[in-house]
Amino acid sequence: MKRILLASDFDGVIVPRGAAPGAIRWHARARALFRRLQDREDVALAIMSGRDPGELLDATRGIRCYIAGSYGRYVRDEEGTVLRDPPQFDAPEGAWADAVRELGGVVERKRHGVAVHWRMSSALGSQHAAVVAFRAWARRQQLRVLEGHDSCEAVVRGPAKLAALRLLVHLTGADSVIYAGDDESDFRALRWAALYGSAFYVGRDGTVPGAGVAIVGSIADLWQQVENLRVVSDRANAVRQRLAPSS
Image (cartoon, rainbow, N blue to C red; front, side, top):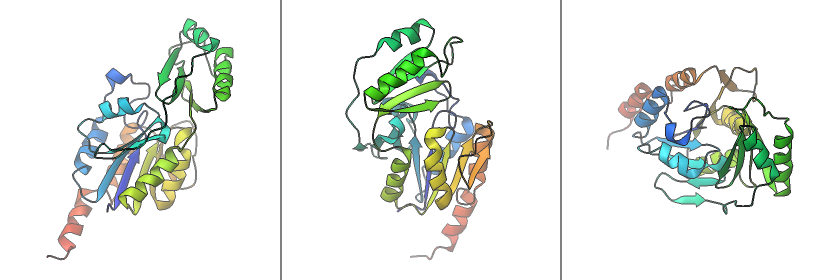
């Protein structure tokens, strides 16, 4: 049984948003904290992201943690056992895909969906006809549409991040939850975590995900605040160990 579950989104929380798979670099404070906490018997760690499971497995090598990829549709435990994995999505693209690429956007095929990115395109945007057509195509495919930062994504329907977070709490037996996120896909998980522990939202756009959710301005600020939580500090852990009755 674990006392604490520390779960975090990935992009914009652990790594800078938009990092390519081959260029992923954890924020130094986040990696140091995860490496330290993975050795504590009372802590379970989890990464919950919209990224493909394979990308997350590569990005978390050397870190013992649960993985919830594809926005929680895929779940794998600390030992590598896959607990949930819906069928791969492989429907052909529509005409919208050629339009997106011609305008400098990126069409990313994922295990459980498709994403359109326009960060590097000055011609594309959320309301461009090609992106609107993508959303219409996604709904015809019975996919769920998720709006992101300079992106729009469509994923197979199924359990999302909140369901994955609750599953991990059940599996670990944790009685306290710490969750960090930075976009709309995290809001329900953040609000739930705020009821049972601590929740942190990384953002400077004035968004307030819900009551009890702490707003932090940067990745560095986030992990400084998480590290300062009493339930996370090694000093508090050492005190509990000293007070524990000897066998």
